[in-house]
Image (cartoon, rainbow, N blue to C red; front, side):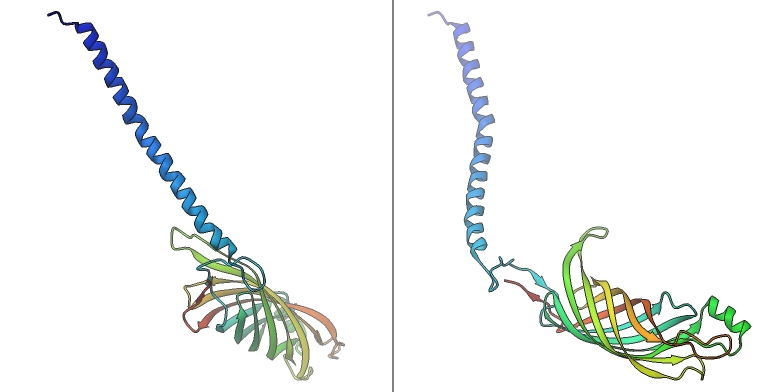
Length: 255
């Protein structure tokens, strides 16, 4: 019996080629099937999620961390004036906020201001011994805060750091006083506008950075003759830094 070695070799080569094709294509087919299954499952899960609506009609984000809603904020703070012509003012203060929801709050800002002569004030006081200027004393302001934007960023790897930007409108009583006896102390109503950010140090505290402008009518200083100059409107800018402590300690999580 003769053996056709060439035919058998060709058959083995053909079978090996077919087996190699099957082994190469099987993983790709399995991956396509799994991807299709995941896509279908994702679509099925996305549909009910997209159908969930809030009371206002907007879509609800599940597992959203609500850093503000229903919480109280207590903030020890320190600020320094930026643009007073003759003085550098330092304010030690304490503010309270109640967050009605995740984007707005009402609050009370209190504090007391100490002032020292800046370079120009020292120069003028060296020439005129009776020179005086006006400074803030105590203040008590009611405020409304709006938080239009919130987000998070990575700093040298996870975990991410949460932050937000806020706009604050305030108004209330500000004490105005002179650096000497010529300018009498008095109370004045003053509006304040501020913008700033919260940088969260976890769920219980956040670093507060703010720049605010207090619009006030005050006597700017005394004249060369020692007379008190007439009142005029002044924008007094200050930079504020504080740490806000949040209560209760556990932040709420959205649906």
